[in-house]
Image (cartoon, rainbow, N blue to C red):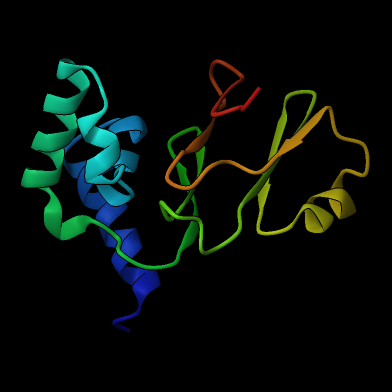
Length: 138
């Protein structure tokens, strides 16, 4: 089909399933911080992010996107690093909701414990086995 959605599916498959990388690293490959942000980090983080950019530069998704992916007991939401496409997350009890709009989440669950819009390039990850959510902004 040769669509951008297909490219994202193949990229997630390559990085997570075939190479076994965790979503925290995958998100930094697909939607990495800008070089100016990387330069301001401590040396260990700077070295890691530089190596990822150099190794996987061809997988940097340079353009607008929001994606929600299910992967072995995980649900992952990620948006482009400058947030040209919307992504909203909500939690009610043990349930994580991801959508492009808060209104869509509230149709399913009108009362939420928490609702937020993650920053660009920051993944929201819900894990079944630990019933945890990574990426909640204070």
